[in-house]
Each structure stands twice: as structure tokens, then as C-alpha cells.
Image: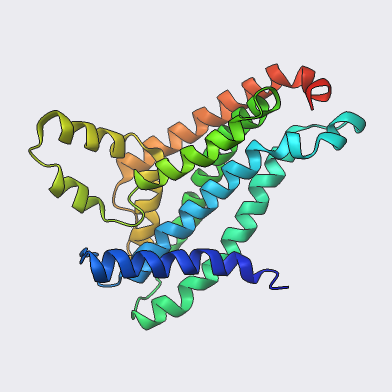
Length: 241
């Protein structure tokens, strides 16, 4: 009955919960002066990525009747799943408008970096999604592992906490601190989320170009690997689904 409203309601509820818990109860200091805009800018990005990855993983199995009966490039099923998540993301960006207005945040030329950030997120989710979609045909429990994996991945991405908080908390902690920093830094979504936060929270161009470059390379590599794995495993799709 709510239709497209669900696309807006889900991130809105989570944003309000995280803002209340981290901003009010735990007293986490958010740069930019607005916990809601900070969290929402990262949360919408993460929702797009995780939704695309989960939908792509089940794209072949969920459309088994088409795979068995219709001859067409099956890779389009995974691509269409990621595009559907992209459409939801575009709609959910409407949530940013009232919160940015209330927080007196402006939008300038740095918003032109958003298409690049979206493209990196799209490529990363599609590349990983192709591998997982092909694997899920043969290992059906893979979809459950993806749900669990994205939950863990969410908490090692600076979506609901500032990167500076991690750098401060784990500074001088020896191997533990080095491990924490390594996990954050090798995470390609870290730099994408930081890029969105730069644009929407600070109205500036993404500052971590070295990290964003790493994410671009990682995403391109995931597309290449994903296509190769998908093509190799697709031969028995019709029999397995």
C-alpha cells in the first residue's frame, strides 16, 4: 500500500535510531555539525550497495523459470537487480533534501562528483554480485552468508561513526590498532562513503582521492573477475536451478 514509501521509510528509521543512539546517548561527535546528514549520507550509500549485492546474489535462482525456458544473456538478470537498487537509491536521495535544509547545508559544484561515486558503487556491487549469483546456483546457502557478511561489512565501514573516531581510539594500540586501521583502509566502501560524506556534509570535493582511486581499481577488477566467473559457471545454470 505504501509503494515507493518503503524505499524512504527503511533508511529513515535506521537513520533516526543511529542518530539517537550514537549522537544523543553515546555522545559521538560528528564532523559537520549534523549527525542526521552525516549518517544519512553514508547510510543511503550503504543501503544501495548492500541491497544491490543481496538482490544480485539471488537473481539467477529467483528467476529459475526464465533460465530454464528462455534463451537470453542470463547476466542481464544480475545487472537488472543492481539497476533496481540504483533506482531505489535515486528515490531515497529525496530524504537528504529536508535534513540538509534543516541543517543549513548547501549543495555546490562538488555534487558533480556524485555520479562517479555512484558508478564505483554500482561497479563494485555488480562485480561481486556476479560472482555470488553464479555461486549461489550451486551453493544455495550462499545467500544467507551474504546477508550475514553485509551486516558485518556495514560495521567495518564508517557509516554511523566518523573515520577520525577509529583513528583516535586505536592510535597507539600496537597490533590491534594496526589491524583495525588495515580493515578500514582496505575496505573499498570506506572511501566511497567518505566521498558521499564530503559532498553532502561538507559541500566539498572528495578529499581522499588516493582511497577513491583504490576503490575504482578494486571495482574494475571485481567486474572483470565477476564476468569471468559468471561465464565459466553459467553452463549448468539451467540444470541446477
